[in-house]
Image (cartoon, rainbow, N blue to C red; front, side, top):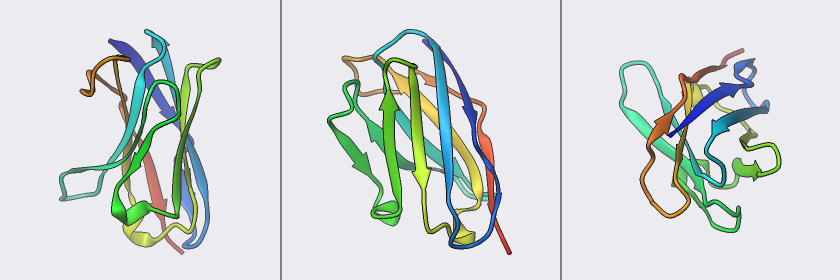
Length: 117
């Protein structure tokens, strides 16, 4: 497992942008995922990226607005969020899994993103 710490959340106006970071310590070359949970709703998948950064996958509702990336030298994953909407308000979580597995075995504590005017 790895320890994950998310950062970069905050309050942003509709149409604005934020970049979330997920710093990992411990195991390297993880695959990463981003998830979110809005009040009263279940956790939903946003995006994932494989260990090399070559393969990415997105939920339909964020395609064209969010971009997942990684910097293996920094052992960090990112989620660039553009054109934010009020319905994007949620706690955003980073998850990680080993290089050769598809499962996530480590989770961060989350960072709050609030989209409001």
